View (cartoon, one colour):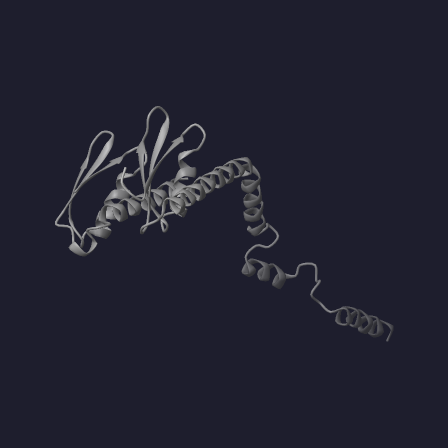
Length: 140
Length: 72
């Protein structure tokens, strides 16, 4: 083991590889990390500080890394637990974004409106004033 | 300099993309074995020789992480 280096043995039964990747990725700017297969089901993490670090600082960095590992492990568990509800929320959001049957393309809507088979578009005054005029003509 | 990457933890595509990024700093040879990926680096640039291996391995790890998270 070289100077400025620590070797961590992580049990793969306790921590998933995704959590290890996550923690390692977060520490890439602080340390050099190399992964190897360890004995039994363990993962050997070679942890080397960037620049010269004292033993105490290196231990602190190693502790922070282990904390980050625990953090990622928990995040992964929560993510798995909430997977269904997340998928449900996204599905609802996508469905609500789809156009409904009533709001078809504007051109077809306009065409229907232009036809006006029930005479709804005719103003009230025009409709009834025409009838009144006819009645007046008949009386005369 | 020879580096062995365990295939359990490192992705071949990650090693290849790292070699592509580092091709100006050394001459690389890559061998894909059953369990390990062997990378041989020769004529390493003197300016980066000190930390070449560590930086290279970090880069491969970051690329592997990116590839794995894309697969999820």
